[in-house]
Length: 355
Length: 240
Image 1 (cartoon, chains in turn blue, brown):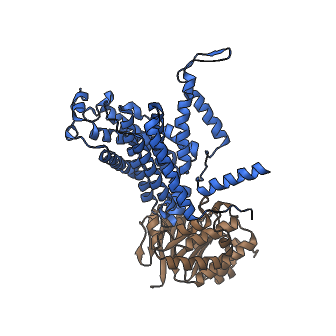
Image 2 (cartoon, one colour):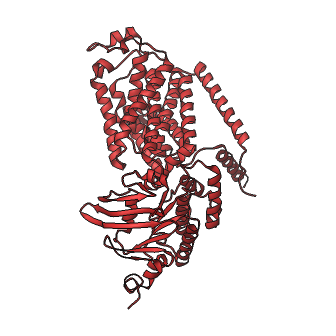
Image 3 (cartoon, chains in turn orange, brown):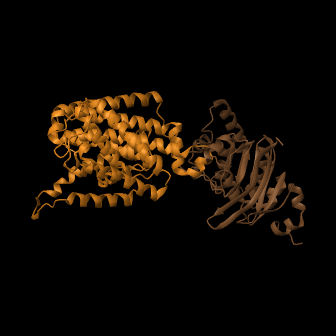
């Protein structure tokens, strides 16, 4: 039989547990030994995974073309910072208008701040989804883009809450590898189990044909709203982690450019594939750092390269265009990486090697 | 009167300024095959869509088993027991055949009944059983049509509405589709069938309505219409 052997559920379970333990070990080692720069990149990868996987739930799985992710990241970031920022720091920061009650009296630990940030973001997600999901296709994309920008503009002008354009500084650097990768794991597990449930199957059915889904008795609207709210929750969590990693935020951090960055990760990995989003987030984050070389001067043999600021974005864009030309559906398409597919890929390699 | 499953009274539908359905009244009796026949643009599909509230009704009322469903949302109408097999099949191409069928059973909470209905569907459409793990989009046109009907049946409907099930199928398959529709009726599922294939539809119909430009111009038992000279001339291509 040439048919590839399928692994038993037990083997897969053991492999998964081993994989998670290995990852945890690597993170523990990186946390102690690696340079600050390397740790920062690892943190950014994890946070981008949270952003990409949550946007993929909305855009890829449910087929709602949302362009408002940056808005929910902003809400998560601001909410968590308002809760964790030390009271003295709040007194120093708010120069133009003092911070309103109750935030000027609150100083919470990180975990409740993250959870509240996620919930507030989910709440806003509901408020945005309920009216805008009455629209479809391009109109929905434009509406969510506008609403995302609206959130940023409000942040820019609500001086007594967000400190307006001055932004917030001195945010406690709570985010470490355990927080970021821990939440990345939670995000992936929650969204993957959702997608693989009958509920997730209904989401996919809605993506493929909303009218046929309605005719099957699926409440398309409530399913879409639910998906949007869950996606917004994790965007808020990611925003909270990001704020406490970078330690300063201002409204400019949350323009629609950020939404498009995440969209690139999702499309690069494959719209509708969770493992694709993880791979896309990792490639995009690492790639952007690798290409930093292009912005500093260097010399190859006789050629002096002066180093052009912003060059990495140009090169990255070209690389992405080339990539999308060859892999139109992204690296993973709609497929998922599984132990079965890894084993059969290895088997193929070995057969190829012998032949 | 209680054997009337679906009752449409004086239905009007407009697409913008176009008056597509001009006051149609239909009664569907339990356990029967009712068919709407007529040419393109007669308003047959629009009537089905209006029943499901997929298009907006201008006026008129629709009752299903005594319940007024005129203004209910589509998914609630489906949950009450009307399954619509839409024109052009509209299966979920990236879901497997099994997943497509399970979407039909989405709101059901009787695993035993689902299992039993699956067996029944495999007896109606043996081909689907062979292709259970294939994505729906990889099936042939005829198989997709079978899947669309099967998916509708998985909702365990009291009324199954079929929109042009024979469209684009090879003649042999068309015959098969009409045979299957009869077998479904024999399992006490009421059927409302919209067809351009007037001959095939009238042959199996208990009662038929002929639609022309949004109006009912003729109605009667299927075999009676089959013998009607006007029908023969207009729809069956018999020169008279």
